[in-house]
Image 1 (tube, chains in turn green, cyan):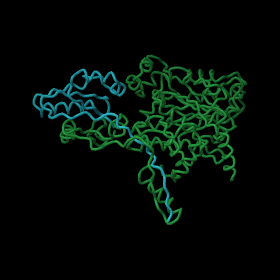
Image 2: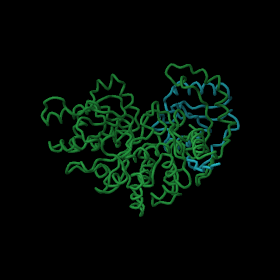
Image 3: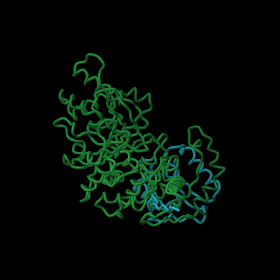
Image 4: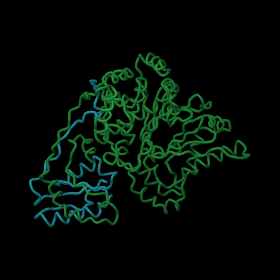
Length: 440
Length: 97
């Protein structure tokens, strides 16, 4: 709540009466409201804010001393954890030199303000992005993607203001299009959502965004974020579309969803709160047509569940991000499928019968939704899990193997795109990365 | 000895507005509720209304549905304007969990 208060531009405290969670559950004993009534009365009368918010400005430098460099490094990590600025894994202290090095990756001045991070309302500058990227083990050439992702994250259309604090364990998904993906070693193939020493950019960029969510936005587990589980939050999800394996006539995601020119560098940010593998190919003597259709049904069937995650983005967001490998996309295209026809199939076949929705209590959630489009959808039987087929995000990515697809369950009021701005000296940074990443 | 200097990573905060001034007393005042209708607000806020009305002479506590309710509505500017127009001296907002 203090985060929410400071996020509104007030000093970060408020007149609050807090109770254990048990009191907020159905059938609870609410007599503590009476026994502690004077706290309510004081909140209306005598309460005063004791805090003055620090002013906006450059991030101060902290200092640790150690007998050796390793000792100092340990002390720095201890201090970072003691202040709850880390994530439990070792971090690279954001020294003046390292931050200055990373700042080469943007054409923008370090003091440039990108916005305020919800819910705490911390001011996100380019410098703060570089500090987070330094702590996450990042490099200068990653900074343009992080800055674009932060811009998209802070766009109110993303829904980050609510999702940062909410219990639904949403994590940002950043999809990168354009040549920058390969240039900075961002994975679009085998293991693209996991660790990859050959293409490590996604982990650093996503970890930096998470550190900003926590440190600038105040989203600490159980305090600033009530996420029950927080899965995939160490590094969020940052990957590239496999544009080299897009079938002829299939537009890149950034072009299709956001209108960016093909071949231009862009990011697209959505939120998800689930991630699972879906077995896609058949196992016996299916014809290519049967194999494709069975795979489509398995994916649609998996989406046809009344857990209502897609409500968050029912009208304009997304029910989820479906990833299919390039080899599958090529096969599907050869059979006449397009991204559009796949989305239409998924939309039609993921509709939920009203009875299934009713027995799962789905209508209560639909009826209290803020969006009229969503509320009106209650009249539909079967009920589409999203307002229109175009809301599905379909990405060609993943290793060149036909067996699996991957579904990132959406929890995303919007899907926000941003162009990536590069500094003039970007080619030099890439050359230096080539040297460094080859052991130089 | 080795000294390691590094940046603090939280970013500044901007305080753009002060908290509302508190009331001198509750007697004779008009109090409203802004409820998100969740987390047992439908039970706890009416109890609070009863307590306030019992403990303070001349107080008027509006019913919990006097203003728009629900997460989708309580944070928007229209609701804030409606609360302001109503002339209440203070509001209690609940419940968060």
